[in-house]
Length: 409
Image (cartoon, rainbow, N blue to C red; front, side):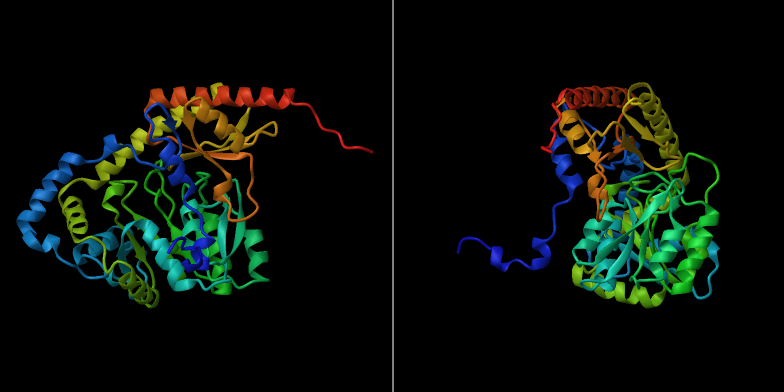
């Protein structure tokens, strides 16, 4: 038999590969400076501490580390996460049983798609929004409705108008140091949006991978604090500890968690036992808060370095708002420059980024792009931004020198 086209599902035939993962193949060449993926700085991984914790885990648990585990996850790890992130919200009846360990927050998104979305269902998502969420949900063939972002996050007036004329399954939001824009929803807007959703009984999927990587001392309560009865809260250790552990979580009302457990059992039975116990050993015996502080301090310096480089080299070609946390700059090009054309020119100059169009579930804007600063050294950031500026200058000259085409009258 040759060819399997007629055997594949229509769902997979409509789905595309991750644009960022494909770009990362190009950036694997050592001569390419990459601002593309949202990768943490590997120099900040607590390698020696995790090594000691692995030895301790094997000493304590032996062969149990290599055995199957429960679908919900390692109970002491679930208790630690609950105590740190949810206990202080003090919502009646909450406990570790509201928490499901997932194989990274990307699996959490996939499980949410399985549990909530039927083909053709409308769902609300930020515009622009997280590419990984768009890709995960697209497998279940929803109707995406993009909610535009203002300078301080979601547009509540648009949201209210949309909810008056449609019944979406949920709103997906990354309200703190949003990917890709870096924007953060202020407390007063969180209260307002929670009331809008509560009035229509619309669930909120709050994805919070970057919340702890803040560059200012004061944090804002998560959306689940304002809308606890219908918020599905997603978290991960990928940005603060190690993405290779592939561990995240979902915290939600028990009725939702029960359905998510069924979906997870059909997918991978449970997340890795060894990774979960290793992580718990680290959290119990090492200083996780100090680890987060190291990341904050390092990324703040890198953000400032990229900010200076952008101001020096790209002010004539782009606008941006400096993030107050997270890992990204969101850039809007001037002078009718296309981010896709700039990407192709920049690759020739030895630097990569992510053009903005994959972050739009519908009606993409072609003059935007995302730059990651967490993975690169200060010297590399300076060099890479100057290369992008050279590419922008080259592209601008080619646009100005191109002959204009006039139609016949």
